[in-house]
Length: 184
Image 1 (cartoon, rainbow, N blue to C red):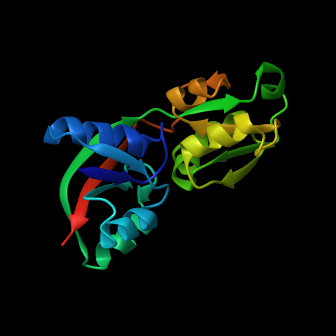
Image 2 (tube, rainbow, N blue to C red):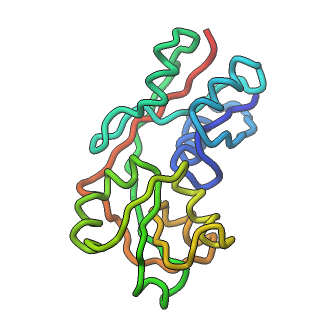
């Protein structure tokens, strides 16, 4: 069985997929698909058996891309889980952490950490990115400039050798509901 998920390795959707696999107790292969739209298309084209998408967060609300997919009436949610989300701020290295000009992450992560960011980085620009874990990969590889800070999971930042600026930066305890979906 193949389960496709929104995001890439070390995204919160990746962690949610692990939880669903434990819950359903079926040997499964995971396939990172970055976006909910890619998950939906892969289900329609029968490249995957199930999909995992973020549905809503207690701070940033409904995930619009996922909501659109579910309104199409081609998919059904067969299970949900709620997970605590611990966002962290990373920089390329300690030196660059002192001169951040831009902070980049998924739109929902930026919203979930808005209070912390405005208080601690009032002069930074905030930019949206396709995935939290992708920001870590792209900062490490040089796609993003060294003057950029990123918001991602602690594991994503550390596995990419980035400098941890701060842990648990959400406005309040952040919880996201993830859905395990299939084609109807």
